[in-house]
Amino acid sequence: MTTAPQPKDPAPPTGNGTPLLTATDVRTAFHTARGPVQAVDGVSLTLREGETLGIVGESGSGKSVLGRTLMGLITDGPGTTVSGSVLFDGRDVHALTPAGRRALWGTEAAMVFQDPMTSLNPVKKVGTHLSESVRLHLGLSRAQARERAVGLLRQVGIPEPSRRADQYPHELSGGMRQRVVIAMALACGPRLLIADEPTTALDVTVQKQILDLLQSLTEELRMATVLISHDLATVAGRTDRVAVMYAGRLVEYADTAAVFDRPRHPYSSALIASVPRLDLPPHTLLPAIEGSPPDLLHPPPGCRFAPRCGGATDRCVTEAPRLTGHAGDRETGAVACHHPLGADEEATV
Image (cartoon, rainbow, N blue to C red; front, side):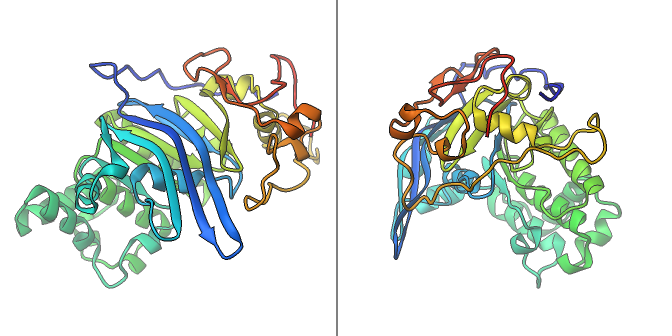
């Protein structure tokens, strides 16, 4: 069992006690030539102002699709089916018109994507990327927008911000480009920030700088933040709660320290056990989760982790477990497992 991380101080509730973001039974399916792929299958979660939620899981577990669905970037239409509700400050994101969603993006909710080069136009200067949104949403003049752009670059820790504003994305390092993308997301002062694998392809030192920057800005601006990652170390100590996804479903949803110190789902336990530890002797083989995630075109009828779980029973193979418990319970949280682990148990995979 790994040592529990030092969690953040719990975020205080909003003034009226209502969550800023409430997702209920969210389902997102993509229609393919082989049939529908249920990428997100019945996810429910809440997020309050000033709170940070980590969403973790293997590649292909549905994390990024969930983030885009929460933002309203994926909607019900040709090729996709989206159901359930996503309420942002009481408004149903998916009931908004396209113009209403565009008004929401940037000013109230923003997203940082995995690859900054695909988020930046290579033929536009960095300052133009930043000034366009503030001129559109905040009505600033060209000079005011330029001043705002330079200030944003300075806020995210880019040296010589005036000079960098006149450069093109390819003239910046990967870490600087990611900071520019973060500055773009923060340009209009959003209340919700969804960061989807914000440190992908960055070296370890730059990863820490970016994560520290996101954490400090979240605390300074009192934003609600969703941090999506396949790396458990990314969310440890930087989030208030963790939602563990597997094959499109939430399998565990609890206080961060509880998940890392007392994981109740075998998948959560196996993920944590596979993380390298400094206290292990040299050349120690890390435990691996045998097998592969299920084909979401034809998911198994019971627990989707059952084929890879050493503790699975006949019930697990035939009956899908429901997420039971409450994410706010600091001792147990919520878990979707017929045989949840106890305080001193580790998963058998």
